[in-house]
Image (cartoon, rainbow, N blue to C red):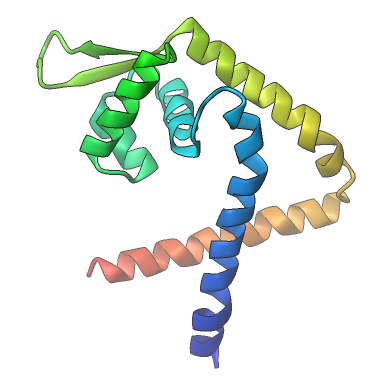
Length: 150
C-alpha cells in the first residue's frame, strides 16, 4: 500500500510543490533579470561568504561547468565578482557585488511585501504543521538518498 502511495502521490506532491514554489518566486526575481538558478547562486554566495564554484555547484546540485557558465552571466550582469584564488589559480572564488547584495535585499523585501500578508493569516498551528511536514518529508528523502548510495 505504501509503495503505491509513494509512487502515485509522494513524487507528484514533491514535483507539484517544486513547481508551485517556482511559480510564486519567479515573478519576484524576473524583475531583476534573474532565473531561479541564478538567484539560488546569489543566495548561496551570500550565505557562504566567498565560496568557490565547486562549493556552489554542490549547494545548488548543478555541475561545476553549468554553475561556472551561470556565474559568468551573473558577473556580466554585475551581480557577482569571480576572483581567481591566489593559492590555486584553478579555483574561482565568488563574491557578491553591491548590486548583488542590493538585489537580494530587494527580492527579500518584495517577497515579504507580496507574500507576507498571506503567510501572516495562516494560524500558528497550521504553519507549524507545514514546517513539521516539510521537515519529515526531508528526513524521508534523506533516508532514500542514503539508501540509494549503498
